[in-house]
Length: 188
Image (tube, rainbow, N blue to C red; front, side, top):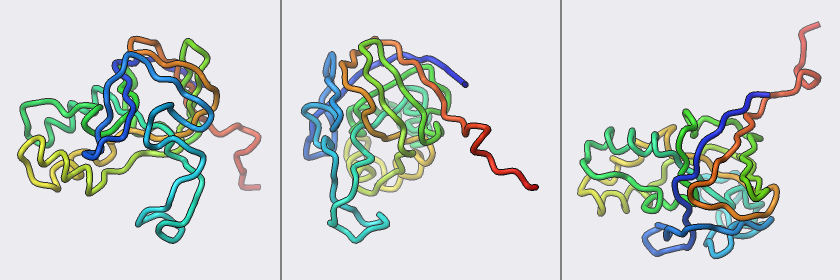
C-alpha cells in the first residue's frame, strides 16, 4: 500500500456565477457532498461530453474537487501570468500541498482527514471552456490559455466515503489505489 501525506492549504464552498467558490476556515462533508456547495448531491445532470445524453440524470462523481498549490503554480507559469491562479478562482473545494502530481492520482485513491472524513478519487478533472473564459477575464489572457496550461494539472474530483469536517491546515493521508494482486490477470 503506497501512502503519502500532504496538507490542506485552503477549503472552499459555494457556487458563484463566475464558477468560483468562497474560501472558508472549514467545510462539512456529508455522504452526498459538501454542505453549501453547488455540486452537492447524489445525482447530477449530464453535460456535453458525458457518455449519456445531455441533461439526463446520472450518478454524481463530482461531489468534491481538489487542486494542488504546486500544479496551480505550474498553470500560472504556463499561462505566462504574474499573479497566481487560485483554488477559489478555479472552483475547487480543496487546495492541497505536498502531493506530487495530484492530478494523476488514480481512481480509487483514498484521502483521509483527522476528523474521520474520507474522500475517494473518481477521476482527473479536465480543463473546461467555461473556466477558460473566467480565467481569461481575471488574468487578461486568451480563453484558451487556461485549458491548455491546465491539461493534466487541473486536479481531481470524487465522492465522499465518510462524513466529517475538513479544516484549512489539516493533514491529509493519501492511500494511492493499487490493483490487488488477486485481481491482476495473468497470461496462462
